[in-house]
Length: 104
Image (cartoon, rainbow, N blue to C red; front, side, top):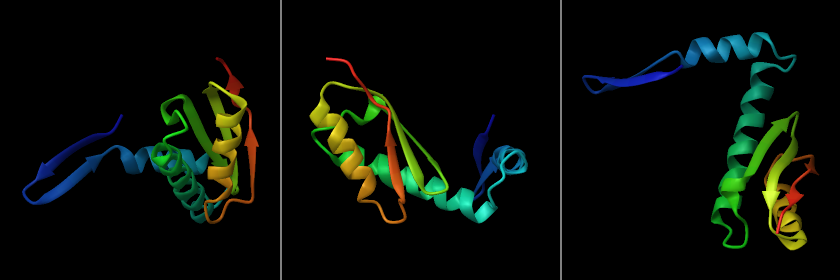
């Protein structure tokens, strides 16, 4: 659990560093790779949110070694394909594994 509060003018986060250290200790990627993958996931999600033709709230984005995995639900094949295109357009993405389910 992460708690955030302000201490004077300095925002303080408690728990985030401990959680990050635990995660990094359980992952075979370097901290630099983990950070790059997190940035890619964030950029892909932002691209999905910007699109008026994709329901971003129903799509999960995970990245491992620059391979993006899209999971969740979409309403059409077109939406599924567009999500892949958006993910592929993000700098640093090597490939996209699209396992989105089409649920009309």
